[in-house]
Length: 117
Image 1 (cartoon, rainbow, N blue to C red):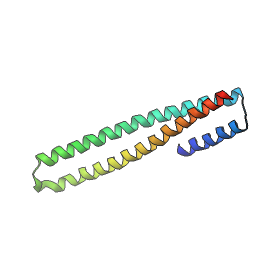
Image 2 (cartoon, rainbow, N blue to C red; image 1 turned 180 degrees about the vertical axis):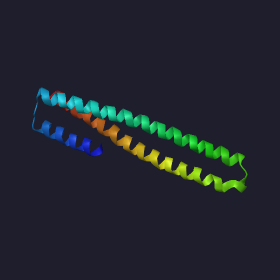
Image 3 (cartoon, rainbow, N blue to C red; image 1 turned 90 degrees about the horizontal axis):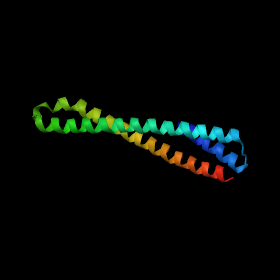
Image 4 (tube, one colour; image 1 turned 90 degrees about the vertical axis):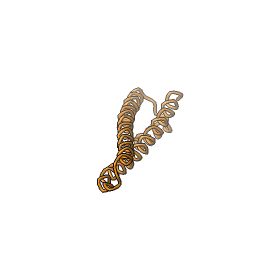
């Protein structure tokens, strides 16, 4: 998705520099922005889901650590590994969503330039 957005930004920027203006290009631009907005919404929902699951597993680890005697610490290792994996995955989703959000904002700026010309 990141490559697709970068390629599209490059394409539309080149078209704006050439001062190409047509209804077909405008329609194509609107469709692409709508597609990217949909992608952004989907990734927002996925990111929030993984963050919620990560917080739930972290809370479960904290509660189980408090109520379980230390003699059974070896049973917590899979939960800690799961928690670590979820944290890493959540960080990756936040990074990807940050990229999507910033580049959608750039596309909005390009839309304004398109309309001004």
